[in-house]
Image (cartoon, rainbow, N blue to C red; front, side, top):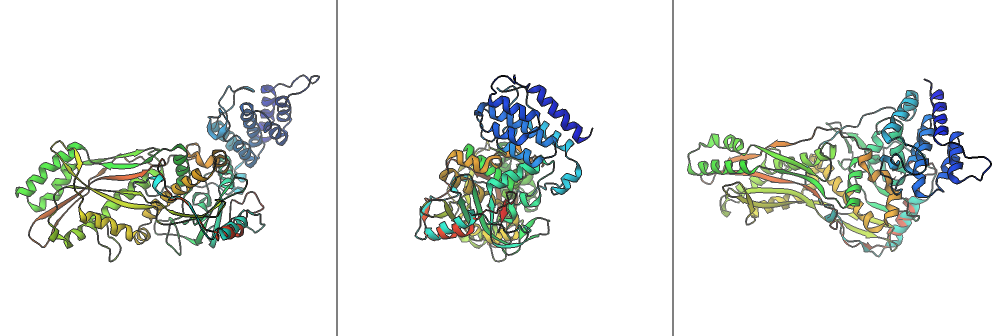
Length: 563
């Protein structure tokens, strides 16, 4: 069936669904909307719909989107769907009301609309919109607490400069859009326009393009600007040019940092909005710990040969359980947290090399044997939030962020015969390793981009909390909308990880012949939006001028990022 024929049938169906009112009687707004829909006058129908009460508006807007999609206008359909964001009683995907709401008959769900668009927009149109592509998963694993990422915002002395930078970034400019891979001293991303671009690409029947997936190359977000109308947020930071690394992942040429990803942005916004902690843990089973205690006793008594100690202890511990909480376990973000957590422990035990000149935990133990041998306790390590410093202008519409949003935390644990663990006195060597890891985190992240992606997750969570603190709810919804509802657009695309092998390392140090066994028992990642991630912003007058210079919006509405 041709697209034109399909569109005609759809309009006829709309006419049947919304029978025309008696032309001799005064028409209500809903009657006028129905007439416009039946005539294919979608712009007029949408204008009338926006004047309707909230409980009726979403129903008509959904029909407008169907008609626009059927007649080959996916971008316009995206705008109509986005107009349903935040409507009361709207629970279906993309804000489309559930079937049976007041104002008409059944409304198709988002999946049906996507199918309609994909069957009525010809492949040539897809190519013109950017072409089909695939979303690639990437590595993940850690403990993140969104409420500890940013310190309280305090006023600073140079707020005028920041206000100027914000003003310039928000003003319109006709500068042409360049390739997102190119270098820029300060790249800006509009979250409001990004959510529209996200909807446009989804409705066009294609996967997200690389610019959207990687937030136009932003790996460092130095500034956050709020529009005066309260309906937009501008993220800004330098981009040193983008290239692909050995794993075919994009990285910044100058800093080596990984661009932040839209799926992590969506998860961070949603977690903070819902005050929902999320993260992962990797834990040994009580049975495995109990068995390992028995093997440890054999090692200490000399009944188990040194060569057999490591494999025997690993076998006794068995597999450790992986738990992802507060978010789906089949997303790239879940894998990021799991992999980063496990890789950090490999660095600690020396099974993966630290940067040159940076000691791992086992090397620290060897260098400090005069403090006594290891006690056979379990070493627990995890990533936790570290508040960012924030400066703002006097109006609190321009913010400058600095600092490292995460830190490594350690804890010593012992276990009883039943495998139950409990905290014991801290090991100063473990604390020394954590301090060393945190001090050299930038070097570690440059060598292993996996950890920089984790840092980006903490950064985005901190920014999401900053918006939650500084913007009213209705303004946040207007500015982020679809972005903050990743469950409606982020597709599961990885196999969930359920278990992992235990990490066990044995080393014979030169002082004596004692074999020291180290087991990394547990850890993980936690983002906890209920806690503060920022300090009180400090007023910095110079930020006002920075804002007015840099926050200019391009005149073209489809330009969601610019330099």
